[in-house]
Image (tube, helix red, strand yellow):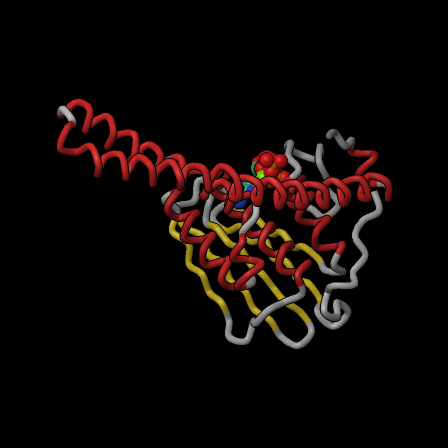
Length: 245
Ligand SMILES: Nc1ncnc2c1ncn2[C@@H]1O[C@H](COP(=O)(O)OP(=O)(O)OP(=O)(O)O)[C@@H](O)[C@H]1O
Ligand SMILES: [Mg+2]
């Protein structure tokens, strides 16, 4: 999907992006569930059968046959692990079950394992469960921020801070890398402004849809992406209209 600068400045362009994000969330959720329910189950069954075959035939097998079978078991486990990782990236089941705090822990650990970037995670007390839309938006924003840090910043460390008071919830993601150019970090910059990419525009869209704001400040050695979402107007979050596409 291509959104030109001009379209982005118009309500239609933002509506288009809102629809795109909504459809993308739904697709990811569906795909993750499908992979989990079909491919992961099939691989688990295959692993079980290979294990049974090995146990029952061990006495009759030549060493080459045993090695082949053990390699096949290892490969099956590897495939299942890779698909589990993929499904978690597509849609975190932990987000649904345990909420944002659990999902942030899990994703930060996963990110550090994959990237080698050390992340300090500060979760202030009393966060509790938030409205579902707020949790999903903050989780996606965290994913995008960390991906950006890995891809663009060159920073070896990052920090994530989440706090909540009666009125609002704040997520702050910071890195000490190269910094981003002004055209990208300025509010109003959409896809096509400055460098390419839909990540920051999507973060802004998700935030503004919930009545909040995204603040990006950046200079070499200190880039901060701060998301602030009000809670008083969000109620339980279940009645918020989804974009009409
Ligand atoms: N933490 C960061 N440090 C340095 N530069 C950054 C950082 N985050 C973003 N940028 C810069 O801002 C640009 C826009 O980021 P954005 O996430 O919108 O797009 P992208 O990452 O290039 O592509 P996409 O997110 O669509 O895959 C990036 O191309 C990069 O130049
Ligand atoms: Mg990006």
